[in-house]
Length: 306
Ligand code: HEM
Ligand SMILES: [Ca+2]
Image (cartoon, rainbow, N blue to C red):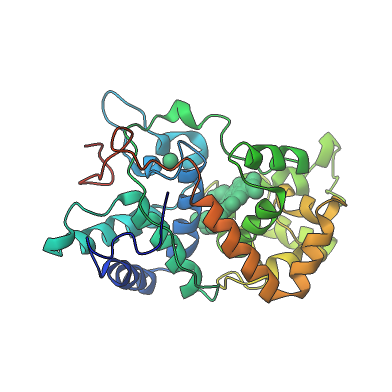
């Protein structure tokens, strides 16, 4: 139902308007890249790709963004969409004609290519959702402690294959994680005093213990990809081969014999990885999309339901 060039007659320059806004935002802060990419994922897995994650809470409604799992979404991701929407709406012909969900899909595409990843044509035509509740997020997003079966199942629930899940996990080639998401791996692993997760590289574990001491300030975050934290590349898989996946859900992809061959292939072949990633994020962008006016609309303010 979605298609490329959906806005060709409605707002012909929408893609360059969004790209320029994203580029300007990226010049202000590099967090724009991971912030926008993770926002797209957290949107699509809850109520489909409908910008429900961007809606702000009101006196009578606690929105998705205030669910505990979304509290670590970077404010700069939201700001990227708000700024791109303002740039689109500054053009008379485009005003209130482009959905926030599509702007987020375009911005996600743009931050990937602007940080060295593949460029691809993005499918458009999503409507913005009509609701956003914190309760609707519960159980819909993967946890960093998930094993391969749990990861595969939660992606399958969104119609996304295990191969696509392995490709999409490479989004962790950029951005940061707070210490609490992996502290169980570096301190008293398995409840055993002084124990470290055996699937974690020892040298890396020591570095992490220094960056994340016990009782660390909860605002401290460390790069998900310690080798090339700002480049969108296949370094993620090379890290996994070195047991330098930061989250347990990252490292499990190289530890489980069912996913390991794919990890090894994409560590070796960045062209094949880029191809797989484009296919996978295109599938992610199709999850639960609303195209019928009875199920959505085009929000005037991305943070407020019309
Ligand atoms: C496979 C299951 C996944 C799990 C368990 C997972 C979990 C996490 C966790 C725990 C963090 C750290 C949050 C924090 O402490 O601030 C994180 C960060 C991130 N995730 Fe995922 N994630 C998964 C898949 C994805 C996917 C599919 C994408 C996008 C396509 C994605 C994009 C990101 C990005 C870009 C960051 C860095 C955010 C930032 O620096 O602001 N993740 N993820
Ligand atoms: Ca959503």
